[in-house]
Image 1 (cartoon, rainbow over the protein chains, first blue to last red):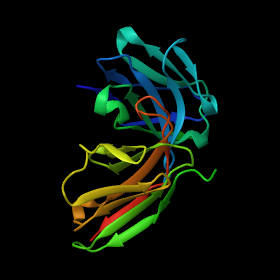
Image 2 (image 1 turned 180 degrees about the vertical axis):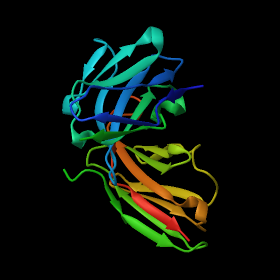
Image 3 (image 1 turned 135 degrees about the vertical axis):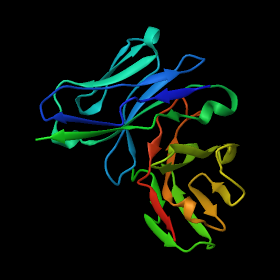
Length: 116
Length: 116
């Protein structure tokens, strides 16, 4: 079955520190991978996506993610976190066939808090 | 473009009442998705339309839920009768293409539903 696991429910980092949010997936076909961010009271906004090609993907707001097929992972990174990055982050996988084409499978999310 | 528009932003109703949530997708997008977000279950896809036709409604929890898309610029999600366990944030999203699993989905701000 298709699934996405975000092992960390809540992470706290200091402003200026580096960040890595973990995402593991289980998917039978070639995965299409996404990271979304949700600020409080807002909808989800796409940070970046991976379909094919270079396994290191650059996104908005200084985020990047690396696809590692051997580890079934798509971890999100940022070298220096800003207070405005405090939000909830969702990893998602898609690219299925038939009726599941419409489906993005979302992880449960990781809430990021930033200490001053 | 104004993005995906949802109304109302907040809805408080009493158990047994009918609730109608509305969504206007981004102009030119031909896929529309309704999601429900709760603390316990995370983000769940309820139904997915492509070119105004429901493609996958396997996520609709029960017959009390129904969704329509009479034209390319409008969709409704109706709950009748509503129950307290329906309390959640309901998101509408839209994308361009035949499968949401492949394409970026643009999310609306959500409707926070509280059923007393």
